[in-house]
Image (tube, rainbow, N blue to C red; front, side, top):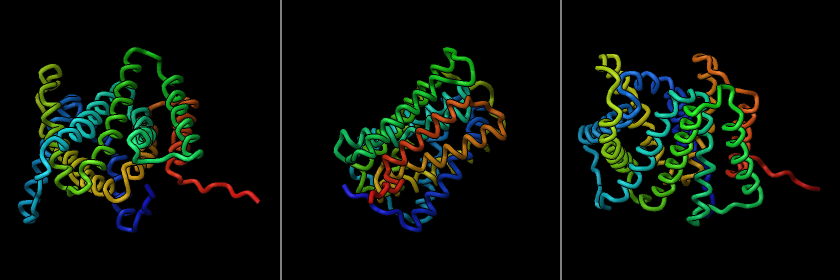
Length: 296
């Protein structure tokens, strides 16, 4: 399947998503403090879905869910529930910077799934990139700056689970929801994502009674990080394919790691920084972003 070039308007969408998602880790940490790592996902998902329905009604935008509920449930279980639960749980365990670097591995998983499903086709450069990406993940997990504890291992596993879920859901949406609008995809995905994660609150209750500021941060997270960005994201998945759309995670990783280091004073080892760079290099080869060397 030939790759489509990203247009000017899509590049604007890409930039908006990268900036908002890059800074979202700071907002997410604040929401977790008030609602816990499960509530931060479930409540955010329901609010995002409801707000889009309200905006659609106000704007008299017609919504079509005639394809049935099952595809939306699969995308909701993976792209929303799986990805956000994994990431939200991991952030307090391994830190913003570490979790963000794992996010940078999502395109690798996307390409693997795309290969298996026959959506993407890897050349030799892509195969090299895949190997480098996997090697980078090993370097990232195997040589931490922080102590190698059970908490660290579980946090890393949660990050990998979330990254794989995001890649799976994006490819599935590309296959099954290509004819469905990005508003419908986002509304359906977040509704089912909230539905699947809500029962977990029984086991992971809210840490305290949320303050008004907690509620404000939650709504901000739902409006910007979920409603707006996912409408743009699903639109891009349909337009240019799952792997190219999800390559935005490279930029998100760079922004989030910078924030973690400069604002939150999180530490990363030299080998982890190298591992993150290797992941980005590998993904760039997979996506064919680096021009091949010409031989005379």
